[in-house]
Length: 432
Image (cartoon, rainbow, N blue to C red; front, side, top):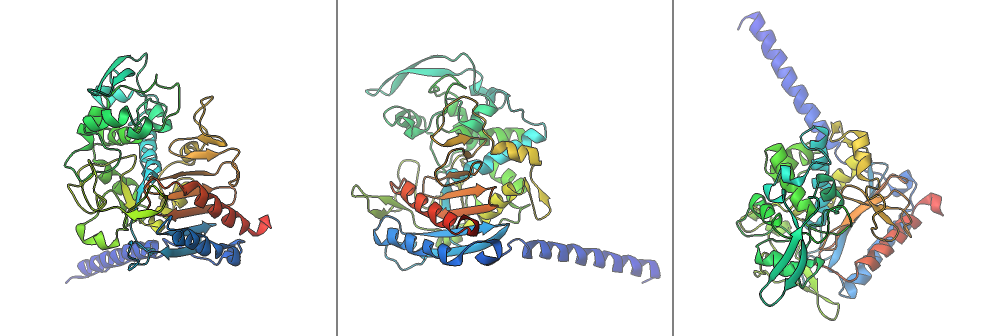
């Protein structure tokens, strides 16, 4: 080996070693930890979360919860309370996978904002530019439950990307009006969540464009399949399947490992069991049987071809924390930039103008935003999921709170969320 070849060999080895070391450092620095006292919180107060959750478990209202609290970019509290299964043989773990449902929406909204920054989408583009069936839309006028037929009239305008991001497009959910849209969507093969069936986002969102809107676009706020439609727009504008885009542009750059639409069957043992309330308010484990579009284990079983941008992701509390921290740090985390600061900030600023939302709250792009909230400071932004998951990001206190539970449409979510908020904010030293 001559001298030049030897020098080149050493140089290549050095560069490879350096890159490997940087990657290892990036991975090892992914999570930072501190004691509550080090960030101005009171440990004795946070410990109350464990008893609070256990009270709900003992009352058979929830199987349990995994809770994560971070302040100043550092995880200061984690707990695993309760059991994943109804027989109480499998305690909750921090690495358990939870069906996040609508906590998918902020992530897909961020994906759309990335493409807007890149000039591949414009906020006021008609959705019909990306999904042809939205070029002409109608508004529901009447519905006949006897034969599931309806009448509709042409809309004055058609939905825009901005209206998808703010849920003002008129696109419905099945549960928006159970006697109407639940039947219409089911009849046309349109699910509300990820499904085990072999369908695609492309074909399903095309069907949504043929469903009559609930109202004239831009005139009201109504929760609906807006972010699912937005997910298809992301696919068209990026040229990638939604799951591939999110991995490439969001989760992998952040070092996120366990946050995705589907997982390998071998990870079924890490998937929490799903529960539902009984008529008495107690919970029962959802049996793994086919229910129209769903089986409880859809994250690890089935065709794995449909990507619900509004409710399809599953993951751990720690991995969702990384997404939240990137939002709190104005689109950046550990040397990775997802969005410009001004774009990130626009996502948690009111985008509804004079349209009504919910009392004490405004709505941005994919998040609700506290205005006159009973517990959270103004500007705190958040969302939750149908399986009783919840998170909020509080810029005033540099605080992130995530609590993952697995009860479909629990009637006790407001109660447990309010108790969690009270404990968290009483633990801030400057609030005492």
